[in-house]
Length: 562
View 1 (cartoon, helix red, strand yellow):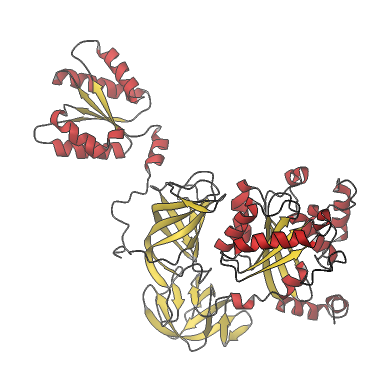
View 2 (cartoon, rainbow, N blue to C red):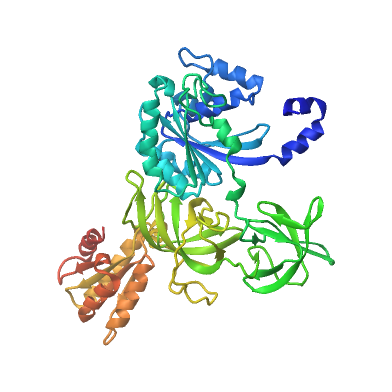
């Protein structure tokens, strides 16, 4: 019995069947105006997943010449999107057929919205890339395929759209397929399928095409309904990041979480990280009662046979199949914020249910999204993708992203604004681990030079005063300090003494690192060591001279510091 008949005859049985259907998440990407929103709208329309009031509203809003329905309006809901005829933000739609339930993410095609595309694709089982048959394979097409591969999407469907504008020519489709196949063969997709479509005319979207009899493959919906995704989940590595400890009474202690990957059974021996304590699974509880086993992505409560100290952020695993434990690793990072990555700043890193402080050891490279080549870089700007070396202040329990998307992914959070600023995927590379002493990495401040400069209104600098008597230098130094203070700049005067060249250099370095204008008086022979310790770029020469009013000398020195 079909869904429609079952709804009319037995709604409870329909709901039970609907709940048991397999869920597939897919994302539609492509260049600007390739027809992504039109394809989704046509798909929803042809499977009768559009309400009558929605259809009526879209018909009224349609302004396309010669068309009664602009199918893109079913997903492009923002006013700016409808005005420009493009997608700006990620639009999610939910629908179901008799075979499966679906969540589709319609993502923007513009380069400046790469972060939106990454957000929509991060949990997808299938990536659908649209290519305009008139334009062929574009730079943006390759860029989106690379990002989809980077995010670990296993299945790729390439829909060559607008075939009606090329006379449904087989040669056009074959040429695009051959060119794009050469590119994606070097990426990590498990399989790649090509379909010639006309989203506007509904050709090969839900039903087959009478205009393309030379094509005998699946339609877009046919592919989505039949692509095998159960094997994509990691059932081999049990990972259970504890989210909450349930203790309703003295006789019950359960650990609540979603099974991130793998399978757990009643009676299994398990280990709790980081303590390393072992026990066995006494029971697996759900809202419907006890279970004999649980598997990803189910949310359950585990009860153990022994009383073990375990709380949020800890991870329960099988002792003979453990994740990596460490504080340092390398990862691909997609930068999501207008404010560029500051390598000297401390951020929060959110990994599974664990939140720890992190530092960027180095930005190894940035990916040129035009050529996909790796380029040297010192930071990452908005929408940049790069390879970054990271050290956390506490150990993480992780797997490479290519092996386990659940424990191989993380997000970076700004420690001041709490904004999510980056998304990362841990690479399968061995990185030397620092000594695990449970303390923050030595010498690591949590305030970067740029943050200090923004807070104080100026960067740290050292001014070496010379060229006059000790008394005159002293008078000028304090007059300059007063003038700087009145101007809103924080200054401090240092005096050199006999045999203290090294101490003066270290003091100047500390004050300058703190963002102060450091005025050194009588450095003499210590000047060279101060320059070397502080850094030539942060040292200014301040010749005072034996003559002239102190006020004029101060004004001249201000210009030196400008």
